[in-house]
Amino acid sequence: APIRRMINDTRAIATGFWAGDGGCLPTPHALKVARHSLEAIDSRRHVDQHPWIHPSLAASDWLMQPHWKKFRFGLSVHHIDFYTTSEDVNHPLFVLTMPRLPRVRGLSCLQSAVAPSNSVNRAPFVARAAISTSTPLQAGKNTEWIRGKLWKGEAPGPEDPYTQRMEPEETSNLPEEARNFQPRADRTPSAVRKSRLVLPPERTEAVTEAEIQSIDSSYTPATTIEGLEETEPLKNWWDQPGHWGKESEFRGFGSADRVQDKAVLEVYLRQAVVEALALQEAGLLEGLVAKKWRHTKRSELDETLAVDIQVQDGKAALKGDLSAVTGRLTNKGPAPTKTAAKVSVEEAQEIVKTWDASWKSVALNDHLKFAIRKRLYQLTGRLIPDVKLGAANTAQHLLTLTVNPTKRGKKLAEILEAQGDLPSLPNVAVHDKKIGPVQREIAVGRWKVIEEELKKRDLPVTGTAGLGKNMERDWLTGKA
Image: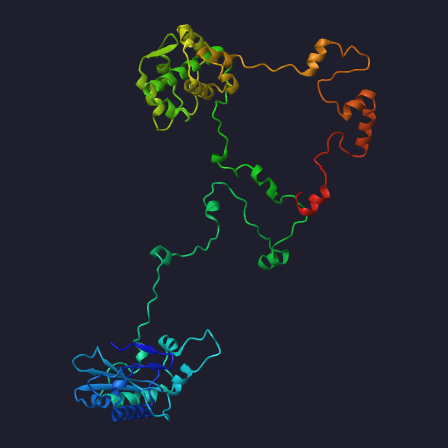
């Protein structure tokens, strides 16, 4: 393998190559200078002053060894001698000699490397030679001459050493995923790409009339708006149907159909009480109290209502198939129905007659009250307020709060009318609504005249007819 070691010193740059494997080849004059340098060192015997020379032999003695093959290239300041044997051609020995002759002239191609540069970003010669992929034009004759002098017969290796030069591999500390990452052409954020909403389209510009006529000669511009497609403005985009997905539709927790009959409410209350007590006995109430319970089919509702509730000193004891009740509520599979099982008023009245009223006296703690109130709201759509839930202690209290909701209080006008003190005064009138300007004009009899004049001027009689304030500003800004 060719020698690729380079010596870069602050005093000069010394570069050595194998025969035919160099970017800057020496001239015959450089070889002659190198030979004189070795002879001068031998004559002065300064081997001990040059630790880079082999201590056992002088430089000229090395040159005289018949079993050594020598490749030496002279440089302007330093000279690197490469020696190798036929037995070990991959591990050459290096001898660095320094000329003592002041008249030594360096290679012209290396003077540009050691000369100072005005640009701080300019790469040194060694770096530029390492990445070079072309041979200098004037190096062809020198290459052939050197190859002929150093080798007897056909020289090994290609004539152009750069044809087989291995480029250094770029090393990176990045993981394989980062090295193989390919940027996406689409710069749309992932949240927008994965959204199930129908987003407004990107803004586009329509082609001009001249461009359309250049493409389609049969194009005829429209003179009226009849038959043209009407495009809604962007401010009404989310009001149009189809732009919201099913996931954006509101799904209330409570039933949309509010139960009004007392017997039906009592049936659903019994179902909620049995389910809550069964989960409490199984130790699953606290884990499911904050979750949405599954709706049951009519057959499952009948099984739940068949569980007997025996109350003694406020404590309830359930008798029946409780595992089936808890299994339906803890099952993570899809619900059999999306709504509660319907019970008619007649069926509810017949079912209530078969129960003993003692089950309503069961004592309820906070966990039971919260679970029953939540389940009852899910089945009937009736929600017991929190301020009144704290005062309830039994199932009868919950039924009373559900059947008899709080009535609305009387308005002030109704109270004053009932008292009759103020309405009896000659200059006092009591109204249940706020009096506006139209009511005042009607009271004095001027409203008919005002209404007629407004119609003559094609103005709205009441309201603004959709024309709010600052309409000119909306027209200019494109909002209208």
